[in-house]
Length: 315
Image (cartoon, rainbow, N blue to C red):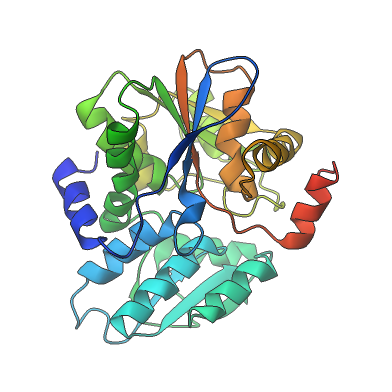
């Protein structure tokens, strides 16, 4: 677990950088109460400003003198570029080739430099923190204690906003978001169940959970859900997560598209694919709970993809 003292410290560091996002109820006809934690309202339209901001703002000046870099499909990249601009240092982003142009454009708008590489090379950078294309301080989007502590500030807010929820569903990419939130929530309310939601095109947490905790690699296919899903777990992060996780679900692409439409129609919230995964799980009936919090992690969806979904398609 991430020490709750570090999460509270992160909250102080992020004052004036990340906002306290609203928690609103989703209007549905049946099933449990569903509450939406709208992280897509952050300055970079995703929760990543919390982790990236905490890591960059707490770094020593000598650590970041040569700039910062990360491996990201888009949201962490935007958070890092935003935070690096606050510190006055350059940010370089190593992105997979399938990263959507909407996210690349946003990264560049915040002053970040983007280098696209094949997925396997990108995964190696994510795991090793090394790249032949750049240098500087590597800030992992997942496997970084300050990043996870920043993410954990969401959990502190949830405890204050809705003290009697039974379960929380968190999109799972590398596990840093879930690790941070669950550390904060379970420190005060260990009875709350925490679930991971992944796209079925790359769901190693669900496969590992089904295998009794034995780390399990899966086939991975890139899809329009670019902010979640992978081929394997990150060992050190899984060591955190495995102590906190109560279940994991692989979400078919069709269900994720349905959730994007539902959020748009009922709340006028525009979620990206990863951001809608938690709502898809909550609406599926696979969780037995009275009040479920769904973390809507981001809203950086390509407009062309969104248009197809709103017309009833699954990209």
